[in-house]
Amino acid sequence: MIIGLRELRFFLEIVALKSISKAAESLHITQPALSTKIKKLEQTLGFTLFERNWEGVQLTTKGGYFLPYAVQLLQSMEDATTVLNQDNGNAMQTFTEVINDSQRLRIGIDGWLLPYVLPRLYKVLTADTTEHGLKIVTQPSLVLKTLVSHSCLDLAFFYSVDPSEDKAIRALPLYEDEMILLCHQSHALLHSPIEHLSNVINNLPFILFDNPTLSHHSQITKRITDLFKIQHFHVVDDLYTAFSLISHNLAFTILTATCALHLQNHSIFSSIAVKPLGNYLPLAYINMAGSTSFEQSPIFEAITAAMQNTKKPANNAG
Amino acid sequence: MIIGLRELRFFLEIVALKSISKAAESLHITQPALSTKIKKLEQTLGFTLFERNWEGVQLTTKGGYFLPYAVQLLQSMEDATTVLNQDNGNAMQTFTEVINDSQRLRIGIDGWLLPYVLPRLYKVLTADTTEHGLKIVTQPSLVLKTLVSHSCLDLAFFYSVDPSEDKAIRALPLYEDEMILLCHQSHALLHSPIEHLSNVINNLPFILFDNPTLSHHSQITKRITDLFKIQHFHVVDDLYTAFSLISHNLAFTILTATCALHLQNHSIFSSIAVKPLGNYLPLAYINMAGSTSFEQSPIFEAITAAMQNTKKPANNAG
Image 1 (cartoon, rainbow over the protein chains, first blue to last red):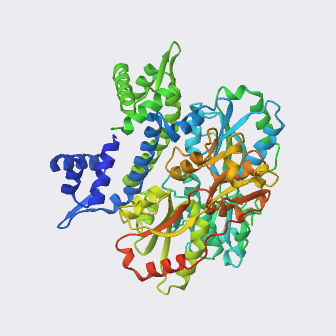
Image 2: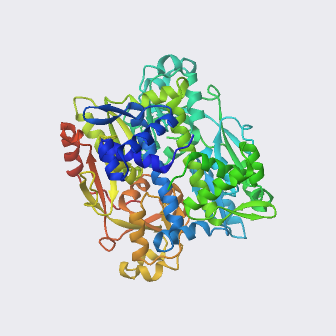
């Protein structure tokens, strides 16, 4: 499968102008050439992007779904190449700052693990007399695994469903992460026995935190929807949004206990109640992995010890 | 510039195996063909990705910087196409859920505006008797502008530096967003006169929230670094990380007042003090824009009124 930035730009121009001929004019290519490019893109993707009608062209449903991806892909690639090719100005300065971090520990953390990982990390690094600088990168778990395996990070903290699944890196399971149910404190689910939950959940407004069509927590999400046979749900890609919906009693959700740590210190979400699901749902794992060179470092040992010699994160958030 | 997914995959395989010959074998192509492809990718990007040495190949500094982008681009594109081409299973179900939202208001909000926008939105929608469902999408401001101009969103809330800059959409400026300085409550900066700040800031550990090499807040960031002539800074891509560093008195930052709203309800960050910078720094703007069709809707009017008839967000966070 080959998709180029040029094809994405062609696609966006047609969407914006709602016409292949106008887009061809604006892009300074012939209309047949543009049509051929788009047909090729459709073949590569495996679905039709546009429907032709008397007004011009219109996005198909799948084309509309693909659009946000195209916008973001183009933006990311342009950001990356612009910065790297710029020889002056603020962007280049920042670039220099970003790459000149050989003195720093480059640590990747799945965003939802920050409240669990950061305080412990600070404790170790403050005690460390060699005074390591710290560079923290937040990315989804799947991206972190790739980065640490390529030695782009010294250390990474990430989720996985199966602790032994990662072949490219030596992942150290720190602890098992329990699933919890979050709902409004007046919600009936709070008093339902866990083993009856799947009977009632299907008729209630369930929200899935994070978009499971993206790579973020898709494995964990699949376990939840499979077990409770959840057919209809509302996808929310931000934890603040999810918590707001729940605190307005507009929905409820199930997620990992570490996710809910973000909630614990947010006073405006005090109306949210938490129900631990114990071992009823399969567990998720929080792992740590170091790059090959960093695993030899004494600070790696110190961090490992600090992370393992602590309790699980509390699941009584809220 | 044409960069394909195949080229990115080639690049990642060489990084993983640290050898062009091993990567060629694993990818089932010849070594000269792979070398040619990589040279072409390097030409397109405008910089060298690998250095050849006796051990095989090694990433250049710019190659190392490009790597995380390549990983994420590949992941996003694979997510998008996998889901769209799948005809069964959880992913397809989710896809159906995501696109079957014609009954819902599709509202895009820059993540940092959530605490400002969401409570007001809920108030309007709860009062609305037609009972609109709500689908909230959080994306960076630049992406939101493109999505609403393509009618992929009914409504969007985003930042801009200049309210009149957006030609493709009719942006409605809601209010001006002030810059504030965040530091530990014992920090000396708290008592410095604003007009002397630029003299002292340069020698102190300054953190920039959000990666200014990405599109998120690059315009706002540039204003800050230019005005205070900040040469050295530490980039942090997550607000929780930024607040943690500040509350441990390891750094300070300057950001928009709305960003700091996330801090306001977080009790663990109570050691952070806030200093409003008034009109000393150029202001940022919070805008709202509707898609062409949605601008005719009565609910659009109701939302506009609710957003405008309210006070600015408080800048006394912390």
